Image (cartoon, rainbow, N blue to C red; front, side, top):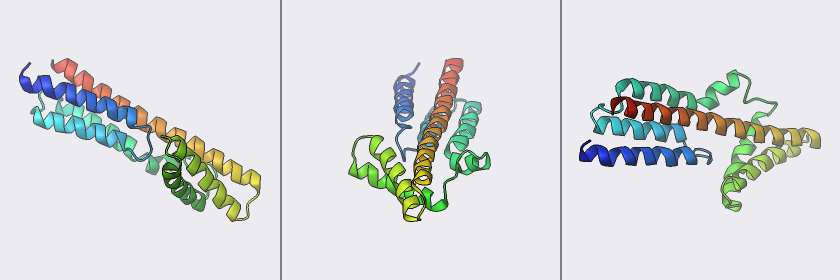
Length: 167
């Protein structure tokens, strides 16, 4: 192991681990950052430890994780009865909640639920339907976190296996 390996490997693994932990935070594109760390490492290392095959697999996983907002509706996962306006209200509420309630994750979740709830109530919907929109926002938020975390974790494992196999 040369000096570059002894410095790059721990930095890459630490960076990926921290990013994986942060992938549950809203607006942190975990899979994209993990992919970038792995790809930069591979380029700097001349694809000796992180093989081209590992980078290809990581790229596919990154695309799956980063585009979940596109393919999840096709599976019926993201719809759950939310109107377009409720979704917009949820996004705006999550941003406002993040700043008004500066407790990590909690402010974002409360804001997202409140945003969807308020939009449904403003549209003249009944309280039961507004509460259902809030519940759907919470469920969809959790599903999104799981998708981001699982794809990020899989990418991390692929990277570690590549290091182990070429070590």
